[in-house]
Length: 329
Image 1 (spheres, rainbow, N blue to C red):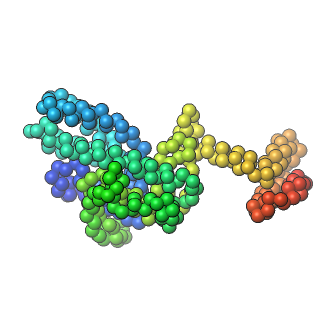
Image 2: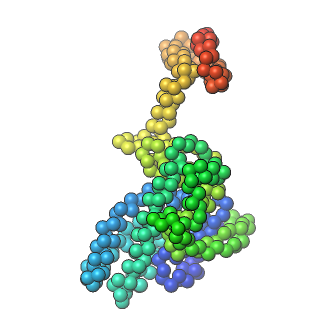
């Protein structure tokens, strides 16, 4: 475990948005909390930032009208919202910084709120970007493949240190990076230590460092929410409870739908499934033993895979021959 960061907590002059993160090949550590690459960005992408619209509008109006008492009441509600955000919910002690900072001036933290609000608004660009990347792809997260897709879709501009905000020519990313050798689990590891003073800078670095390590936020094809696609995996659906379902997840339903589509769109699979149902019914009625059924399943799967390969190369293969073979037992 990386040494405690408690000694650094008061080096930020009570700046809510300033923090540092340690990046390794495996994960990210921020103030003793460990996250996977792109885990925080994925959580931010699923956060409904529109809930900040009304309180920010109210705070601006109250500040302009110098209504300090009412401003503080709305501000209290905003604090609760901020510290329910990803990352900040693990830094709840920082609410004391906000309280100290506006002790004498009720409107002292308004600039901080404006920065948070502006950075949260850029998430819509990230959502669009990720949906575009996965729109017609089922690939595993692979750095080289991702680069090919960005180049093909003329989206390479997103790598140019831009905010993904309204003005693509502005370069707001302001990150100081150092390298540090630290001990973890009894072994020395090299970490990249980055200092942040805006959320937008962290979003940018988290996304592209994640992609370099084959992690990426991915939109679920059923509910539309983002889930973390991890190294070596290629899921199309998330593991959250599916819409209008009590217990089934999107992945549960997606697997069934995918299987049905596989059968519907491929006659080899369709013949296999019909044969499976027939032989399974025989086993259930006692006309086949468990051992005989298991033997047939192994034979049928091997036969199915052979004919799937044959059908892939030639759609005119003799499917009646396949049907005869799989039903021959």
